[in-house]
Length: 500
Image 1 (tube, rainbow, N blue to C red):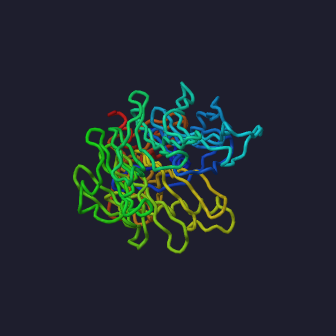
Image 2 (cartoon, rainbow, N blue to C red; image 1 turned 45 degrees about the horizontal axis):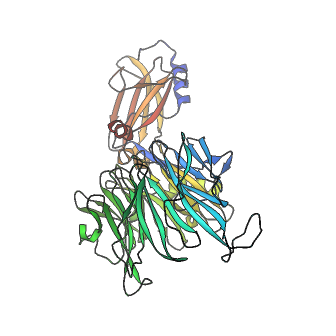
Image 3 (cartoon, one colour; image 1 turned 180 degrees about the horizontal axis):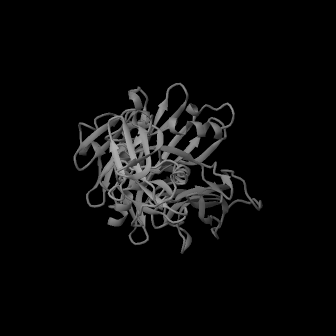
């Protein structure tokens, strides 16, 4: 930056308009989360499900309505797709579940069909088990090809009904799913599998079964095709079982996680919900969430924030080992979202979003009674989640990290004959924020003369001074042609993307 003869008063006014600035080290930059409610054509999405609204590395997320889904990013809809097709049945609903960075989407569609032997003449048949059945089958979508029905992928009963789902797709186009098995028209367990256009369907062998009946629920899939999930470990019958976690490698097959680490996975009940590209996974052991590093054979229990005795669940993690989960709100019948890292432990996100939540909820509903469930977290630490209440009110939401850095004072001064503004930040007022470095962020700032074109500036040039103590941060910024300054979060996710 060049120094300028611009008047001191006008420069200070321009900088004040710019708001808070930041030039801080990784350790002291602070982030908090804000709640974003996506809308489709001006309407918030209140149709939530366990497998949907997954966010990808581009910050795109899926929003489902009954017959359509939308791709949403930064407040704008980029695509809307209709589930209607020529399949011979009455369309009921669709559910887009997963989107990768290349905008490849998988999900499922449900149709109501009339049995061939039925004498009913209804044009739009209602469900009656004697003459109609539901058929749920997967689909694939991308912007170039539109929806491709995969109605022949799974199993069906004798009457033609079935439930086959795809609910995860990795960056290589490999998807994860399940299909019900049938004996006649009766469900007889399920079959987990992976699928792609290139490789077709490849079944994941079950780890336990009684007379051929098994239940395997895959949950997470990484770029290497490694799968984690849960299966039923049966006792005397199919109605008596413990839920156990499994690990599936395409080269070696399936194994119980107790075979990986018998000491860490030693209880009667443990799950696996997600796995990242580095081979770390998350889930629960009994009532407490965990993070486990497969390479180091090292695990961590994830207790709730402040050490309170609340049950926790770990739902998702990214490639920087940031975990998104939930903690029960004792006595409120709700659960709050948290993020966890090895350096910070669990950080409760409800205080971050509580004020926004109170303005969003119907009158009489306490934010602590809401069920906010993370579904996915990308490498920028954006979280897609569902918000549910005890009423019919529900929303698909995004939890977005934003810079939280406010200057306690600003005053005119000069250093080494250069006039400028000294900003002081009180580090003791950080509150319930999160160190930016823990989420994979660093902080920079940019300047502009017109608020349209922004350029990065650094502390090594133009007399900028940054001094830090245990209790405060000082930033001296000389006057110059840079009228407007803004802080920006710089994510390590961009470095990961560049390496792909």
